[in-house]
Image (cartoon, rainbow, N blue to C red):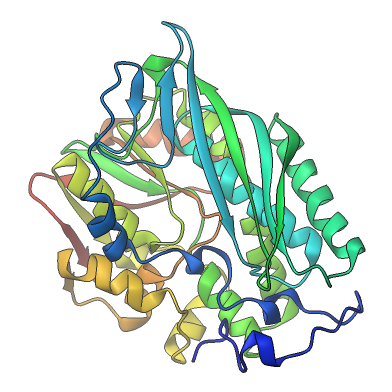
Length: 360
């Protein structure tokens, strides 16, 4: 049992409606993007769908990406995405902000700018109204921080809390980023450190301190807007955000859809403070086995320490961008990120071939 699973069934546990004592994560079977449906099962499910034939549907299910994109005219296309999940933290404002960030980041991963958002919410009626107000207010502020507006939504009753957003953004049809165009010779970067799943599970077990928790929450509340702004100055080939399928899962998606091999250097994997220590102690999230089932058979591991393997499979919530671009642009990219005081770490390269190779 991981730290993000129930100790007793929900229906057998009375809900304390005192806003100062109720813990959101106690009401969730798993938290954040670790709650994602199994990627392996999702592949099977979507295999039965016939892609929509529409001239102006620029990105749909053939292949699927971080969001759908529909062209309005030669200058404008709409990006449409939705994302929601159970609580990953107990603080209502942090939960609302993280959930909003995770949804908004899909638009940035496609090269666009958020325009409008609607809330998707499911809560027990017994939860204190003040708690729900904090969730909505924090989400609204984060939507504003992204340059968009939160204009309503839909709320239903549910024993397990869930919150997120449906988001519409805009992008020039020639400026769309996808995960299916990585090229041999590209360098591979990530724009946030890894380990949010490990940190949150470790916190649930009382194995990390407040400072480490706050650092992870800070990363999950960081919009990918700044990174996207810098990347627009460069000729990037493939972009996706690292979320519930972990670094390895999202790297495999990029490699498979681009028809290339991604070679990752595990010693360069950036980790949030405390995440690797937790991995060495045997901490795992509920998303770890699902991610191994999805990506494991496509990975070749060469002398990689188990703690870094765990980090690579760790489901991220509101993670950073995974970016590939021609290696000759690397120095300029790194200089630009440094000038903006934004995080960036080169973690690998693109080669001809298939699958993902992880070197120790």
